[in-house]
Length: 367
Image (cartoon, rainbow, N blue to C red; front, side, top):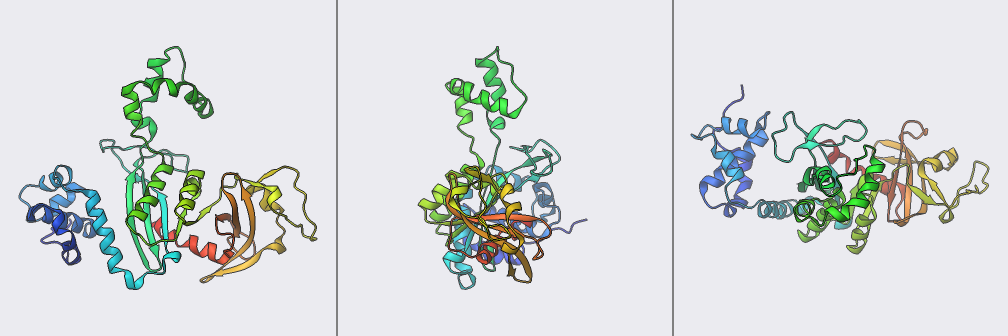
């Protein structure tokens, strides 16, 4: 049985005072403190359990009404939190150009389907579609300083816009295909028509892709004056739209490169084990086809902390991304284990710097 919360946790009492003026009265502020305390100290962090454990609350619906009905502004509270955390961590942060904004998404899986905006989302690599919330997040990383900047739910377009119903209404004779490629082709044919329907268009306009969410968090960090010079993300977010925004905002970036991504063969030279230049017949080559062609002696050991990787680096051109540097990094110096390819817009960075910067994203991945 969990112990009751007789008062807000001392750490909450100490730091929550910076937000006191964002609430209309002391009762609202007290609910805010109780909610934070429950998230920190209770193993089971549901709203019902937090309300049950608050000893001084006579009405256990108070906390629910505070979160769902009370007129306090989440965005104002988050702005105040970011400003406060930047002020508190000033002596411990690295320089702006060495600080990161990590963009990622995750799944908060649920058992029931009664939660608002819960849906089935693809669990990449597991071939499952668990029932979950699917937030896109941004996290600030500067040496030992790490804290979340933003979180917003991603909602699938099918959840917001009943595409099947829209097609059935405007194209009653069309049988909807089940294959993804066929459905995508049908989208291009029918979407311009049903989007003229005010009801469906209003719902569709609420949809934002995860790429749009990522761009939103970059712009948000800049508006909040979060001092970062590099943005890191996984291969899902390595899109032309994201890279274009980062170039306009003068932010460096680093990402994992998908193995099926094409490289322009005219932009680089690769030598075989005898030192002869390899002739690549096609104008493009996929990363997964390039890696087996790299001779073992072309790899160099790169030590990051206590681990040594086997690495090969090359400057190439990638369609839609331009001139970039890639690093083929093997798990072990002996070139055994799994390998991954990192990519960055900074062609002057060493393999060691590219890997060490991207590895700073890992703690946000496992939280």
